[in-house]
Length: 193
Ligand code: UDP
Image 1: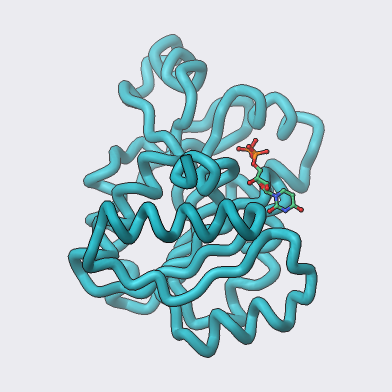
Image 2 (image 1 turned 60 degrees about the vertical axis):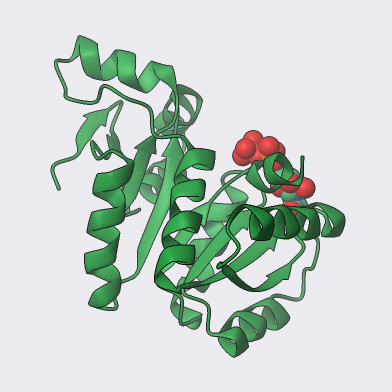
């Protein structure tokens, strides 16, 4: 896929449906995919933070979460015309998982928040398989990795704020069987209501 680049940061031009379609193909091949939300704040930070820039650019999909990215694309005659927000992307992926019998794991937020998010999502998508979760204050990383291995998750959503969640994904994605990883910031809090 042809990315657009602003301030040295790549942005994926795909919309929700195109990302799901692309992911479906990658999952079928067992390829690992990561989704990171980009906004002007992160882009400006990445200008002086080489590691953050690398973290963003090595992701599979850098979704344009923020009006500023659209503005940059318009000014530079790019093709990005609609936002792809982190929370809406997560919601599309949950629906996809519910429809296709994919197994979902949550890691992050306070215990009561992640539990409430799970319960509310199970009400919204009754066929979804949320096969496990861990709160974001559980620091025994081996335990978390083992848990994801044991439940054989396909998609892992990590909500610990950025870039901590993206660092976790980079360091752990190859130790678990899951193939789709999204850093979702405060999205569990949104679902918890
Ligand atoms: N969080 C966590 N572990 C930590 C620090 C934060 O699980 O060690 C959670 C926090 O409870 C909240 C989320 O990470 O649910 C942070 O969301 P925030 O809105 O700050 O993230 P952003 O969207 O700004 O990246």
